Length: 164
Length: 288
Image 1: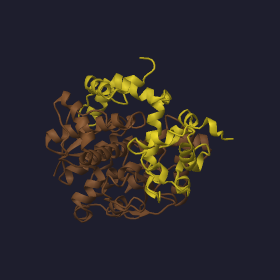
Image 2: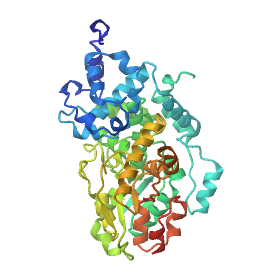
Image 3: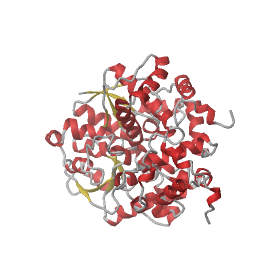
Image 4: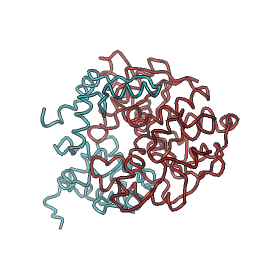
């Protein structure tokens, strides 16, 4: 049951002031997003229309602390089809970004940031990789760890990591 | 025709058959690729964490190509998506551009908005053209039926891509397949995502999405799935055996990169196109 006194009426404005979240209240709940969603097809835990309604109603904590928020693959099927121009995939990114600021970053992203910090990319390039590449006639690759760290710092990404 | 090649993270490590074959194809079609050792991560992994951080990484890479004076060629759909979106956004949003350029100043580069970012297949389709490719075909792949898989971020969000292909009914990859002499077939849910975006978040859901597509492709009896993205390959090929165990099914569907089949049609031998790295062998195709 939804309790009115527990809702945060300001949440939708918080979302709508972020680039990509502006069109939230255009939604007339037709459900084209949910019908188009490849995740929804295999996992009932994820429902874009429901996430929009929860956001509009102000169910801030439920949305931001949820595990379903992270199930969006970002495939844009909903965004391309939305008759109201809600820009749903962008909106999902906005919600995830706000969740991160509230301390709810999914551990998978912490691991990706750690890889960027440690290797300058998602994969470690070992001598073995470049030896293989050489055997296959491909040029060696280098990873710019220091420049990556500097850019991560300028982007304030380190502020989001709990174990720093 | 000159391009600065943006490899990204996944391609040079897990998609070397794609890289090898695409380099051969580009050489044959007169696309000269330039290397740049200053490139960083495209920014895509940071989109969910902080969109502006993703735009900053993308803008850095675009600025590097701008300093080189070259348009950028991408090969991974995820890199293509975030770089194209950033390029489109920053060309229009002066406030964000100034904010980002202030940070890029530390590196001595600037996003000016002077270049294009294009996926390898888009370059073949738009800049080279199907008719030109047709004239260079040496060996037609007659009788083969392939299932095109457009990686989502190869053409979406369509607003950023200037709708170079129709997002709901794309034809560029189908036409590029047909020009090899093979036939691009229709199959159910042909536009659906590979599920790769959430492989690290919810493997079960992610593989369930990939499983659906493999079943639809199998139902139509396709000789292979044809891809444009190394992460789609992680899903369909590198996880195919695992999915067979989980879903108690046998697919046995070869997963090939478009550059590999075009390379065959242009007259290259399979060993020159990295087919030894494909784990599910397209036996009939390699026997021709």
